[in-house]
Amino acid sequence: MRMSLPFRLGVVAALTAIGVAVTLLVDGSTDDTGLVVLVSAVVAGELLVLRPPHHAVVPMSFAYMLAVVCAFPVVQAVPALVAAELIAAVLRPGSSVVGRLAVSGGRVAAAAVGVVVYGLLWPLHAMNPTAWLLLVLAIAGTAMLAVHEVLEYAQTRRMPVPGGAELAVLASGMLMAIGYRGVGGHASVGLWGV
Image (tube, one colour):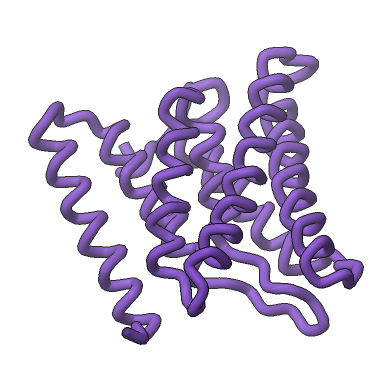
């Protein structure tokens, strides 16, 4: 069955509503519901991609992945991102199940690199916390996008030329991460703005 993009996004919205309802009923934690919504955004970001000229697609999901990496502990972020990519593999266009799973595997690898880089650098606190967080997010996001570009090169044998699309995704992810969690967990607005 061929699903249209609006139908796929509708499935993501329905799964999000179910996930939020379940987390609110089980423990009422806004952190858990925030994770559900951000992970759903990762799935939607896999379906909504930037298509720069003469370049492979750049999925918006990397922006949301960066926010998840920053905002949640590894034990929550990693399984949530793996689950997001498994759902995305089902909803992603393409006739080959193996091909869709391979793309999701590449995204999980990129997210894992982001988790490792963020986890190694953030605790060092080498300077002003805000400046340090911005630098760590930029490095982690760039590392994630670099994995994406290397995997694209391995598949196409064409050298990618990173540019505006990657910068837009990286900047969006950095803004979401800081907006969600704040700096060091202080002065954050969270998903619900409180």
